[in-house]
Image (cartoon, rainbow over all chains, first blue to last red; front, side, top):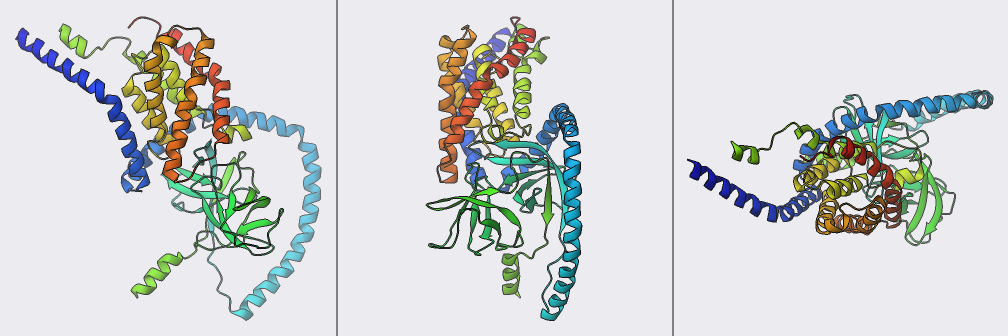
Length: 289
Length: 174
């Protein structure tokens, strides 16, 4: 009995030594398999990693909650110092807004009348949710946010995400309570845009640098530094005319765009569903019918 | 009975043995805290690599390959980078430290700081190269350089927190 035990232990030890020798190679192989599976966009990785991401996002949210409370407390007392100046500024802003509101009402009525005359197809009503930023990741490899969506059923992959001033990204992954957003400067982000002034179209593409780049601009077009960039509406995810940013530098293969929102200072974001028809789906359904 | 103890070494310090992984994960997750700073959101320090380096130098018996692998998988699940691409630099760090352990173990802090300054570029550059292949285009190198600098600047803090755990819970011979 003792002999057999010793023999079993010896074999176990031998096996363990062999595994230890090849374990590092095996670990590298597994890592590369994971990468290739992610690259091939199989649902396996997405389905497996979604609940894990949900669990980790919850953990991160709980872990950083004391730090968030401290930061909010600091911000509150910091803002108290400026409250009087802000109050003055807001009063002035309110006066200007009241004046603008009266003018806008007249434009709105005129617009309604003209729309009726032209028999224009009105876009469906958009819906949105406001989500709190829980975590942010930004380096050479990615620029992404994790936001708390409180189990909202209206959030889905691909929806547009807005900050206070304009477009900041799109939903990449949706869990039950948390969603991951790729910012406009992430390498995975591609948004059809155009210049507001000259209507020159292009694609706003992130490359993990702080500023995204407008690429695929036709040669010798009328673009210059300071031009405002808005969404072009191509692709069917973003409606046309949403503010994105301003051209700050023209380079060989495009133009660098500074987003209107400060991407490093986002506390809350809006995930908007414009309920636009998917052009690809419409064509596909049309062909079937 | 003796054989069983050798195969399944369960004793009162088992819980403490999980602390390197737990502390490393907590510190890595804390690095996702959104800060309103340009440098923090474009060149976040590589906390996971720093933690792995620290524990591989001081307790390679506890922070072994299996733990490095689990750590890599969990940090990848938390991150937005392609799954598995955060694991590779951790495995490279494991290989480097295990092979250079005789030059690092038992040295003063400044030597360890110098050590990570030498090893970190290999890990970061390998990840940069891997992801450049993945995306079929070269990723920006400047943010990577700043990640390296912020990592070096943060190492005393990260190392200090890990050292507190090491000195309070894992100093006894297990």
